[in-house]
Length: 225
Image: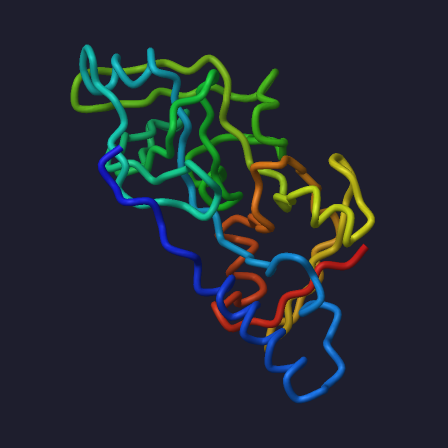
């Protein structure tokens, strides 16, 4: 990959500094500061995941995804490559970002407003659970790729390292709540826990959900069991 591995994220540095300040001045350390890892809530905009075979159909024989920007989770990136998504009403979304690396299935993740606009009845699913979901047509610079299934609305979820599941007392497959403060304060009641030793603590919600709670980089966020 052509990109330099990412430096520590801002929120990780802030977490360590905040904990040190509380301890330095003898203040009671809030529960969030005691957590082993900082909580990051990110809005996951519409995107797609592709198999190596789909990449070659769309971008040409031998084509590989080119990293453009590293994402928070280890090894994940937004690729330079984009495709055009053609919906059942012949309406299109151009410049749909491809995320890498390649996966074993093809999947398109949309928000509800995207689904309605394009004419999809996309169910809320955990990533990878695409059985019985709508298909679509993707167009790239080299050709068309027909997906027989794989269009979903991603269920709101939290990526957790085993340190995080131990701290919060949850396990993979459980549900948590996410409280977002601010002028449009909201609590999401069904946040699916996805645990793996490679994960960093990160919540993913879609653009509709992020807009509904007016999520900003400085919004107060809290995980609740």
